[in-house]
Amino acid sequence: VVFTIHDPTPLDDALRRDQVYFTEKSRDGVASLYPLMDFRERKEHNIRKRYLEGRYGAIPRYPDFGGMFDPEDVCDGAPET
Image (tube, rainbow, N blue to C red; front, side, top):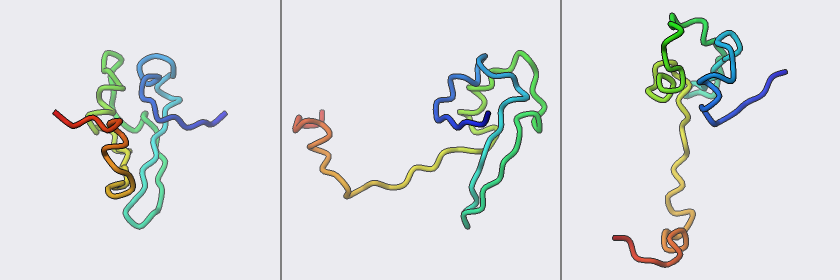
C-alpha cells in the first residue's frame, strides 16, 4: 500500500523508519523519491521534528496565493490588530 500524507504527525511512531519515503520536486518539475533509511538516524531522533527542520529535504513549497482572495474575507471583515 502506498499513500501520501501532508501531516507529519505519523512520522513520530505510526510508521516504521523503513516505511517512510520522501519526494522532492526539482525546479524543472522532476520528482525524486528517496527513503528515510538513506539518512543515518538514531532511534532516539525525533523524525517529525527533524523533517520540519528541513533535514531530509522534501520541504513543501506553497504557491503565492497573493491577490487570489481578499484578506478581509478571510478575517470575516475584522480589522487586523
